[in-house]
Amino acid sequence: MGVADETQNSPGPSRPTGRRGFMQQEIIDLIVPPLRVGGWCGAAGAMTGIGAAILQDASPAMSGIMTGTQWAALGSSYWFSRTVIIRAAWGREENLTPLNKVTASAVAGLPPGALLGLTRTRTIPSSMILCSIMTASGQAIVNHFSGRKAEKDEDDSWLRSKWSPLKKLNDREYVDMMEEKMLRVDADIALIDERIAQLRQAQENEK
Image 1 (cartoon, rainbow, N blue to C red):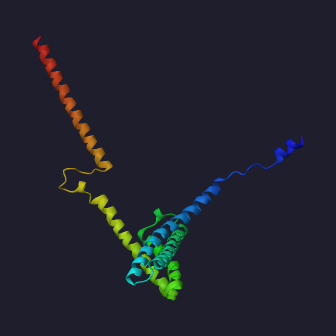
Image 2: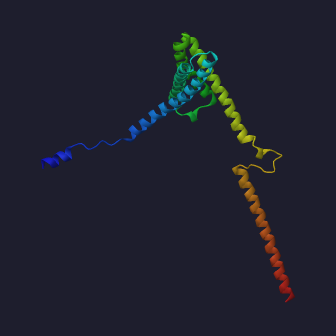
Image 3: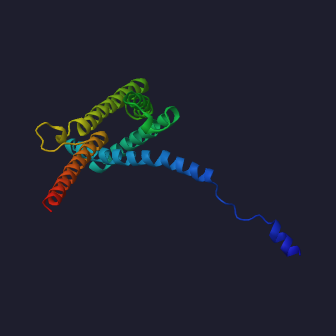
């Protein structure tokens, strides 16, 4: 009885709740993309540092490590700040307008600007302003080319050209075309039925 009571009263293994899994996924989505962006920035910075060291007759390894580390920190801090700002203000990336994206990028450029000021120029305010302008300008350029690409894919398709033998139809145009074809088929069937009736009448008259 004592063993049974202890077994029944002993707490079982805790089950993970859905809330905990949700929070873990939120943390992963918040940390992993900035680290990925920082990795790409670090690789680009390392290549740039090695090239600059070769031109300046310095140590390529040391220059590549230092520049790559700095660029990785700047890229990670920028993307992390941008992600936090977007989630706090708009929720998701899909909810942003082009102006919202420029605003988020401009504000997200302040932390890496401060980091750059601490490590390089020692003038934090000017570095923050410069990085904010650069990130906002870069986002505006990305918005411009993204908008042109989407507009070209939707409106300037070669299928919509007047010289194209083919035509790209939307759903309404396709439905209208199919209804027109069905009306033509119904009309043809009615003519065939009428012709068959005439032939039968002619045969009966001959008999």
